[in-house]
Length: 266
Image 1: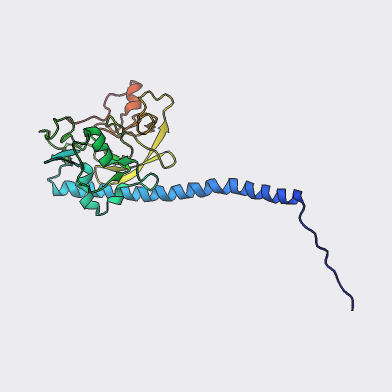
Image 2 (image 1 turned 60 degrees about the vertical axis):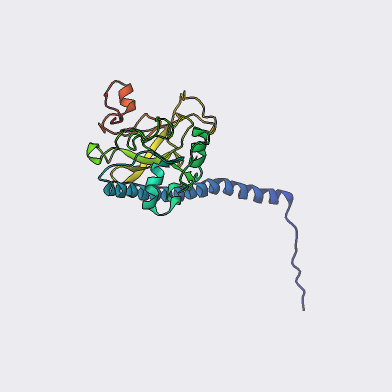
């Protein structure tokens, strides 16, 4: 009976290096794809959040004689009740206020502590939020008033909005120490936005080639690093203001082609 012997030999160093190089190339190709897919899933979840918030805004207005919430109310003895707090009962879960891509963007109780030197606190309905608000839609209820007082400014009514489907309510954003509300295009340069009429959609952002705002000492970035790429808010670093002409925006106004950019009704 003949014996058959199989020749065995180890991989050479060059062969191992080739295999490692192939694996590295495949990883370099696939990892960005996986990251984009993961971010796409987060963006979808975020858009769902903004849709829920948009519906909460509509339910609030129906319960309060077709008026939008004020941005801040003072409650004795030392509590600031915010427009976030006003809408939390309508979403049932405060985590709806948090985007999966940056769930701790806005530390609301911490912001109140810094702004008031610890004199005021929040009701404790939530801590973190990822969506900022349109402070022209949610009118000033306490901001700018003497500490511990509410102003006499009346809230915005639905009937006052000529274009509720174009007027932002909540959106992917952050809050700087001077209470500006810049956009945060955290989803592959996209911003998810809830609108005053109850719908939500994606808004494209673009990098500002010449940001000039002061650097925020807490966030370490400029509020005008990103601008809205188009639509009624195009050219602004915020989705702020009541839309009075959907065919005119900040870019067109700078170019001298129109004059009616979004503004406050008050």
